[in-house]
Image (cartoon, rainbow, N blue to C red; front, side, top):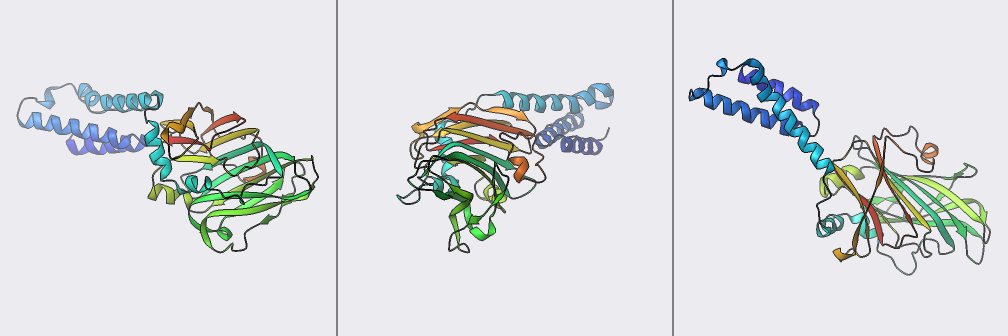
Amino acid sequence: MSGKHARILASRIGAMLNGTGTRYAAIVIFLIACLQVLESTRLVVVSDIDPLITLAALFVLPLFIVVSERFVRSRAPYNHDHEQLATVLSQRRASIVSTQTTTTDSIEDACRVELLYRNDVLDYNTSDYVSVRQLSGRNLGRSVATSFLYSEATDFDIAFDDIQIDAIDTSSRKPLIIQGPKDSGEQCAKHEFRILFATPIERGQEFSIAFSIRVPGELSWVKRRTGGQLQTISMAHYARPVSKLTLCLSLNFVPLAARGFSVKSIDDARGFSSIELEHHSGFSCGTGIEGLLLNPLPNSVITYSMSIEHPRGLLYGVEYFR
């Protein structure tokens, strides 16, 4: 087999190995170059070597190397310290903005959230960020509640009018009205809006609403500007303690590694803690609301999740590596 034909075969095999293909092709080409040097110096006569041995040395050995490396990396413990995670987190504007609060922008102090569910559905074949949320709780205020105030942060400035939000009442399945800010055409990174209840929630009455958010172009923007692959949820805006948090991340590829974490203070790496994640093959609907809000359902290949009773951290998140 000539060096040219060997390089073509290496490139084709490399293309089939998605993710590790470049390294595979590089090892094969390196071995071909070594053989050509040895043959040119007449230290080795390739034609005298059994063709099967040559093929094994050029193609099977590199394949074994890259597959073994990928397996070891996928099973290796997370070896990035919290200072590195803090650095990545500091590059994500949405995470930083979501922790910045004032005395007037707490999420609906009249309502206590007993279940906060979120599933970030990321498809890197598109450029859009998609997330599904569910908020279930009880009105603990002194009067009836007509709406739920929510705050969403984005990694880049975008007008609220350009963000797609669809909401429903989880009991009746009725669509709910979204009331955006007065300056909804202004580009910014923090977006407050209200979800109007189908009927007013009386004192002590329970509620359960769900909504989906699509931010066009955010995935590609983050990949281009920061490269930091993580998703976070902030607890800073909730005036009353949340009883339970379930955070999910659905991906259209299997990452080399993924880990959960919590943050007490973004400015101090000592406030970072690791959280063990569960994972399921394919797309997992934690509460079933995805089927009501996403059509069609995404082609996710893996879903990571964490469930926290009485979360007291500032941020919770999942970091993953392609």
